[in-house]
Length: 393
Image (tube, rainbow, N blue to C red; front, side, top):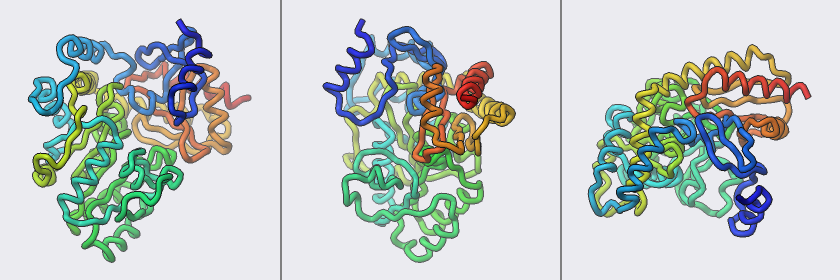
């Protein structure tokens, strides 16, 4: 077995450098824990970018992947597939009423590209409204609608994009009043994760729905992180009584096997014709087996309900701990941001040294908690104790 220095050397030599990495090489995972090549255990409160929804290597997901791999790893959408049909049925069963069609792809960025493409096609209008400090991916179109300038590094980007302030319904109302005839869609993360876990008041999302309906614009929720139980509901809109026209998702959809999906309201799905879109690897049998198993685990273990209860208890525990320097706790379900008076990176590093993995954000004082949805009270107390120890130093 290669040691960490050998592994690091190989990756540095051959892999394009796009991420700053923790100095470990992970070998395996189980539930809420991952283990490095030296055998050290880490409590995972980041989930590999919110991906490990059902926990690392959930037995039901592993079984589904293993069985499918022994039968058929891949064939494209040029043929029908039993497992693809069953996966689509399972995925749509979680979606809000009216969102009856799903396009399967490979990532959240691709799901968002699909959404804005379909919105322009359906509406016949050019203008896309996105939110400042929203994040939608790193492909060209997804980068163009991302609201952080640091990610829009390949100018000029797609034409016909305007940015609005997240949570400001009056600004959007004015924009629609001035340019409503041009607006094809509004796309937003209902919880701005990279911005430090920002949530708007429920009235904001309802106003968005009313404006889009009034002006025949498509409302798109980017639920790449918030979907599949993360916020205590299957999808975020259930929390505020709002159904968008399109939902994009990825991350935890297949418990770590690469997959993205775009859910369409039936009226928008009808506007997309044969040959106008596609993805070679979208809906691959192996990914579909993992997605179907993930949905089954979400339902049988009631993970959305668990996320709602566990997240509330975790927030209560963090507040009761009276952590020094903790300024604010924001979040919903198991998508939580801790804003400190000082920068979060040193705290994240010290937690890592104690065997706890957490995440940063573009808001430099905010630490993000995005654990697998199977966390229990003992795991949460382990995190709180580690935070107490770190913040005392």
